[in-house]
Length: 141
View: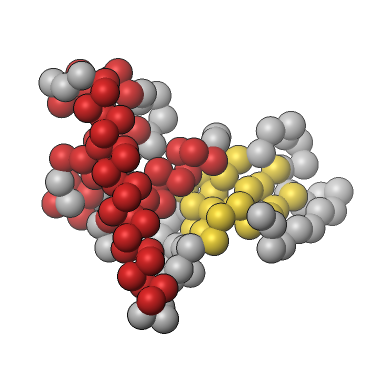
């Protein structure tokens, strides 16, 4: 699924892992001194956010679309962007899943829910994000 692929001895190896509408994408990057790739979320006017696995990067992209885009800058180490909070409980739960050191059990405990409910939130957010992306594609965006 690579549209771009280049490597030099000094540079990181980068390729497009996932391309979305509205110039949003996930880039797989492997620095020259690393064995494992990382996944960088990119969107216009959005801070660089890097993840250890593609699944978490995809969840982050889904949250981004469910909030109609949000700005990570200025939220601090422990903050949550206001757009994420305003998008509802499911979107907030999935956003928290994308943060380092937070897993499904932690999120379930935080919300006072069973882990299966968090899985349902993930499914709902993914479905919403897909509908939003499909609508943007239909409108030619």
